Length: 103
Image (cartoon, rainbow, N blue to C red; front, side):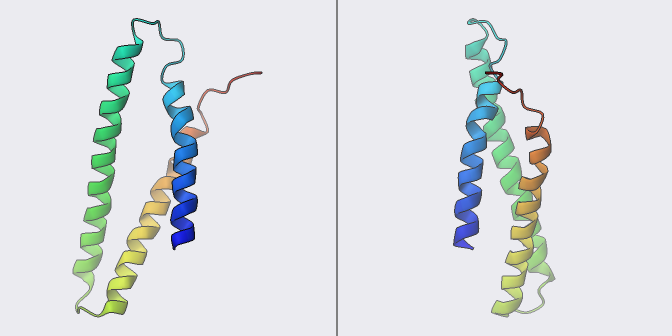
């Protein structure tokens, strides 16, 4: 699981910069400060929303476990981690439409 988290973290870090850079394409120098604050606000709101969705999924999974059996609880965490991977995979769809720089 550590290797998967390292790869996922590296992938998110590699995608983060192009997404942020594409937010400023075509803006005038007067619009950049507004775009900067807007993108930061959206990051904060999106991050909080994403964490709360994953927390709700985990809570539902843990509520479905009738006992405090460690193996059953591990399965609940596994299911939640799979949802997290699914959401990250879904993010590839809009990432495919990011503007490309022609060299």
